[in-house]
Image (cartoon, rainbow, N blue to C red; front, side, top):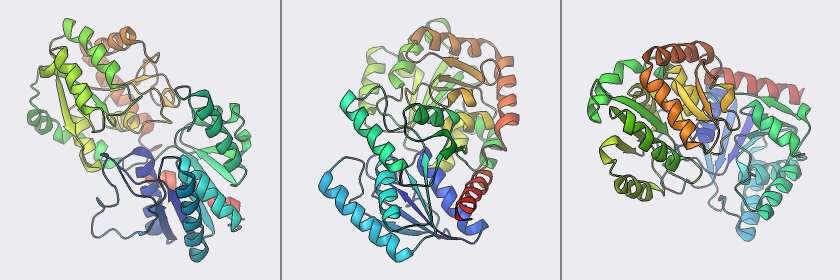
Length: 385
């Protein structure tokens, strides 16, 4: 097949890693001709494309005017540029990702009569933390774009439910395909545990609570810090490992300093994807306190590594964080409940072992990127047939 993927930016993030694996698997495992169309990877989150090894071949068509922010003139330029690239490439399948590229890419592909147009919903672009006008605009845009594609893929059942309830498209237009990853490094991560813990100053007595997320709004870092105050009072042997970088780093560091908790928190800064399994190996549990997320990759990554997870009960989290089986679910924003869940795992090493073991057994096969790509390619074939 000739397949074009369109995404707004290729920063270090879940949707982007999903897209990259899909592109590489299609060409390497199925012999497809693949083109990745992307805007610039602006911001502090890093760039997946520049991190590719020199041996990795992938055709990339950069579109500088394809940006996240709404900008009518620039967005019109991006549409024309993407349409021109697609017209020259003549794909049988166009697969779009993210809100901006999803609208522009689907519109361009539809205007060209591309035989199979697919969009992956990594997370709904409209949510309750927006103004009512913004929410209405994004919902309208998604409904409009959904009529200009042949199928929608959700990374979690919760995403399908949300978009169906919002009138974006009927349920029969969706298929859930969990976001794939290279599971082997996570299965083998325990060998790095002692070295990574030593690197960051953790001793055997420390219970390490990890969080993997951009230091950005709605990711819940403030809530983790607030919960830490309660946890540390009762369990001074805990330590918090914050993996990632972003615009809120200075603000968080100041808050932690004002609470005199500096010795309990470690910031890793920006890390490359291959380093994530090693960092998870140093953790005794993962905490995910985001207020909106399709299905955070950090959750299955931790579980496949044998590390239990605590998450706010949002979107697709409950599909992997099984209450009392692989971890605990917490009502979003409930700091006391979050602290209590953390303390439950701090004091019960047997639960940590059992939850992590069950998570590894349950989700390893399900989240293999090869399994994801195989299922997605089957969708392509069904549409073309």
